[in-house]
Image 1: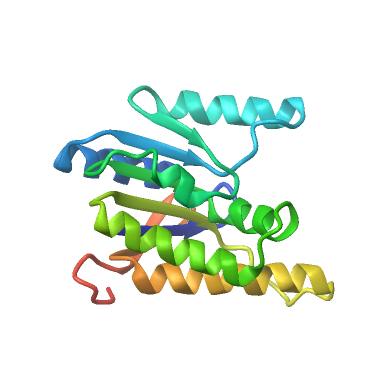
Image 2: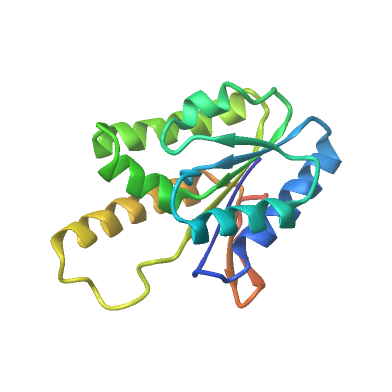
Length: 182
């Protein structure tokens, strides 16, 4: 099972994704993993935010920190487990601007993550931010980033069993497990 959950900043998408991952793990058994794509370094405010997220998640999570290498992280997940990846927005920016990987390599990595998760029976919940809802940017690099992120979103939404958008804490299901639009 694969779910894609998107929404604006502070919309409640991570809270919804964590609840879904808990539910799937309760139904399926196995371990529950949290794959953080954020780098844990940074200023005091960033560290405090990471600490708040960990505390809000509560016990029972095995945390993996991997800013870019999604496959390396998946290899550390036991088959039959549940994995929450939070979030693709940071992953995409780090892939483009902090790694030596090209966009095509990032897409290939993401495709492999999705297929390997299915092959290994890992329930995968993927979170990302809606950042392309406003006027088109004038800056070429911002446009490049948004275009890449939208390609990533389209790929994940196409492959996902469930696609959910969260707005003001309320989930809107666009695609259900049966593959049919809501």
